[in-house]
Image (cartoon, rainbow, N blue to C red; front, side):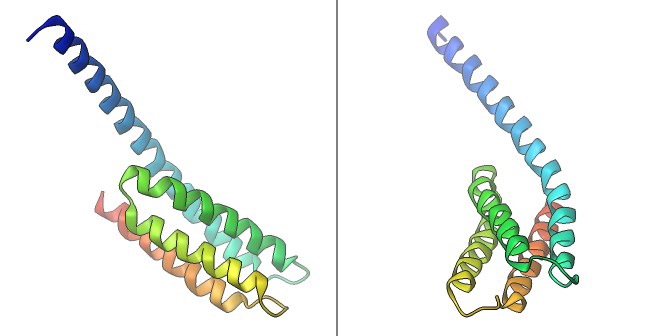
Length: 121
């Protein structure tokens, strides 16, 4: 092996180690996201809550999760997050008041997928 190949190999190993570390950090954040999304789902049914603001926050979480999950090999989580985001966008364009039952159903599916994915690692 030439010194150039050895250098390339070292760089590749460093990159792989960095990606593995980022994946572990992502997995840890998933646990916190479950709790936060559960809390947001509960807020949907509290009195005097701005439902549209809560739904918008859920949509932002789904958007971020959709973007990040696939990068770390959690394609099913990313797909469920994308479905949730799209359903929220559709609901926001629809009749008012917002249909929170649809949001809740897709959020529950996302949470179930996250739990299943965490159990699999």
